[in-house]
Amino acid sequence: MKSVRLTIDGRAVEVPDGTTILDAAMANGIKIPTLCHLEGVKDYGGCRLCLVEIKGSPKVFPACTTPVGQGMEVTTNSDRLKEYRKMALQLLLSERAHICSVCVANGACELQSLASELGVDQLIFERDWPELSVDLTHAYLVIDRNRCILCTRCIRVCDEIEGVHTLDLMLRGKETQVVIDLNENWKNATSCTGCRKCAKVCPVGAIYVKGEALSSTKDKEVAKFITERRRSAFE
Image 1 (tube, rainbow, N blue to C red):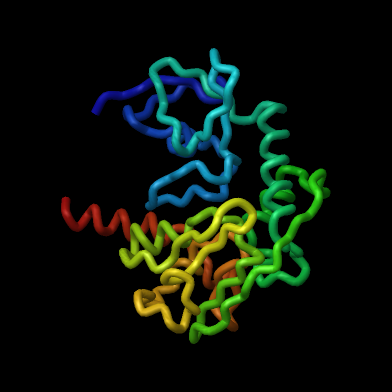
Image 2 (image 1 turned 90 degrees about the vertical axis):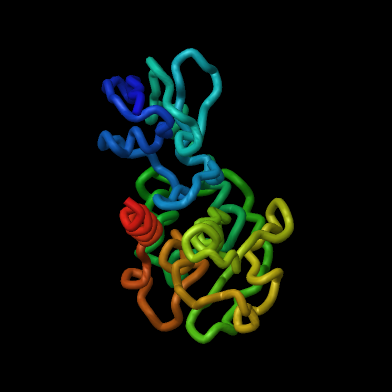
């Protein structure tokens, strides 16, 4: 396969053609923050935390959906990008009721960890939290839409890995919600296999397993693991 040479934060790297900037950075030990990226499923550039700068362009680009280019010079951690990331996190925190002290994900939450890491300790935006439903009807899974950041990891893993597409999005803007089988209660979702993959990959406390610690039920690697096992089975 053809290789592409570029620099990321001044470091010369070489990766296969078609690699995204995010994957190229990760493969070379360069961390770029993200919440919607999940190894093993397709990226869609939703959270905008992985924005990077490319020399020669005034724009910023989502690293997860932008392919590398020959001779590209990428910056991942400028002051401008840090401010954009803090702003993106503050928008997420202003849109839903993220109160860590009463959240099941407290201490095991990727949003909380990133806010701490990036120094987000206050909001510049007015809170505008809609009152959304909490579905407790499933035997062991819960969805609390007030905690959801709409990263769609749950939807993509349900569709691309489990292959049932039980979950999807409804409405638009701040009213957007993850729904189950065209907005059924979870107990009536005949397509749901109860595999728990949605709970394993949820980065916050929106989908979880009743009565179990999130630190023991989360598994971000599940989609990557299954994808690699399936690929190896056909090699």
